[in-house]
Length: 94
Image (cartoon, rainbow, N blue to C red; front, side, top):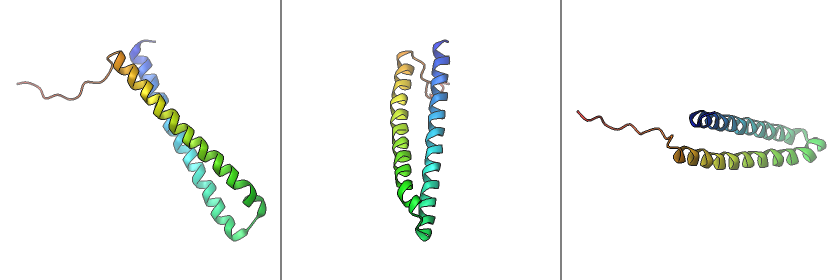
């Protein structure tokens, strides 16, 4: 795998990590909805278990965000070290 392929693979992983974060955030929202609906029901089982599930998913989202940040730094450093950065659009000289 050459350097450009590695960079492309890193970009793909970043997209997948972002997708994972979005999925976990959707799960977190769903848990919050269930918690809100249970306010009217008052089912003790849900009162006891959902806060722990909510906390675990919230922690997972935070961990994923940390991984994304650290992996982005790794990807950017790799790109700079191997001079793979895309040149910025520069005005052409007439």
